[in-house]
Amino acid sequence: MSFQGIFGLLGGGYVNFIGALCLLLILTTLAGHLCNRIGIPAVIGQIMVGIVVGPAILNLIKLDSLLNLFSQIGVIILMFIGGLESNLALLRKYLRPAIVVAIVGVIFPVFLIRAACNMFSFSVLEAIFIGVVFSATSVSISVEVLRDYHALDTKAGATILGAAVADDIIGVILLSIMISVMGTQGIQTSQSSTSIVLIFIEQIGFFGLTLPHG
Image 1 (spheres, rainbow, N blue to C red):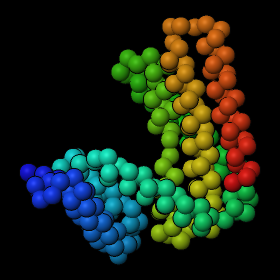
Image 2 (spheres, rainbow, N blue to C red):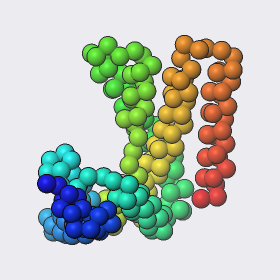
Image 3 (tube, rainbow, N blue to C red):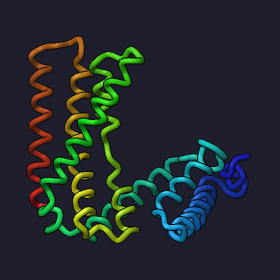
């Protein structure tokens, strides 16, 4: 019987959720402490805990609506803390190398996945779409690792964080365009082309207006 099943017998969904949350907090805290002791980022141990106790291996805890909600809150808090500890002056100072790193980080996966997809008979459009998906970067993981190494305020940390943010912005724009292109494939009309251009302009406008005020 799974962990959820045991706690479900004791009192329903909320007891199940509290028990699973307590178990996760205890295990991730211990794993993070152990990883710090051996000199690697705590987030590595926390991810490993999720793999081991989740459906991938032991299947003790399954992701339900409550756990999913709390996981999203946790990511928001982590990003907020990363923003508080970030030095905007450093980010602006190293914006150019960060953008270069981000562009390379998008182009390389797209071409690599494009070449790999040739072996599996994917179409060009499908291969590019998969490449764009693989180009996405986890800013939250980057922030956590940099925090563990106290490197958020360094040149390398500012470049990495700036590149991760720029990579995600580029990825969101490209992914929106690819979804629109694949959604209108086979129905090529002037209206669909206008829709794709409009989406691109909206994405550029949104980031252009929000970033200077961030």
